[in-house]
Structure formats: structure tokens, C-alpha cells
Image (cartoon, rainbow, N blue to C red; front, top):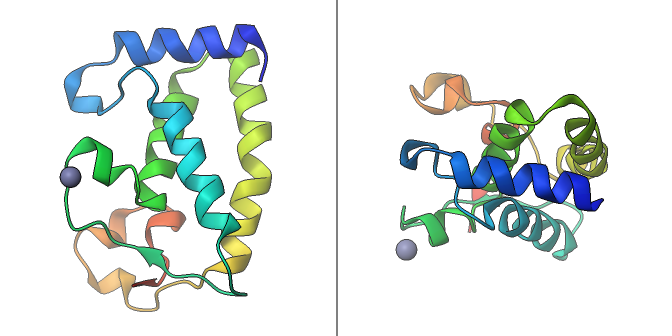
Length: 124
Ligand SMILES: [Zn+2]
């Protein structure tokens, strides 16, 4: 990632409000969670649900990590956004390939409103 994009991300993290759950380093940690999840064994993976909703544990949940990346993408200026999006696109393709859609997600009041990565089968 270019220094310019890293700086743009750092600015967004610094200026984010508490309600956004973005802190300095959140994007980096979220990308680590995403890569770690995809590096795990098995043809198919379940997206784990974190038991604890504190910011650190929450970021261990690949779907939450992807949420944070999305929040940053939506705030980035065009060029750094393109760079981060290009980095995330292959991860998204892998996630889509290696997880399965939860056929009952639409029945769940919260999950039904989630983006596709929040509507995958969850498990241990
Ligand atoms: Zn916790």
C-alpha cells in the first residue's frame, strides 16, 4: 500500500467519531483479520461470531473486519479508495468462494440488513 493511501487511511481513523468504531490502526488490524481468516484450513469456512463485542474482540470477526474496511472505503478520496478497493477485491472473491450464504439470514432482523459478507453461514 502506498504511503499516500496509508496517510489517507490514518487521517480517516484519526478523525472518526467513537460511534464509527474506527481507531488508529483499525484498518490494518481488519485486513490482518481478513487475511488470517482466509489463510485458515479447509475448502469451506464458517464465519465465526465473536462472543464479546469490545472493539478488539469484535475485530476478530471477519464480517466485522470487512465492515470496518467498508467504512474506510466509503470515506476515502478517490485514488486511495481505488488502491484499497483493489487490495480488498481478491480477498472478497476468496471469502465468497470459501463461505456459504446463510439461507436463513433474511429471517434475522439484524443480519437481513447486512451486506453479503454479514450473511454467510456462521459457526465455530
Ligand atoms: Zn472483548
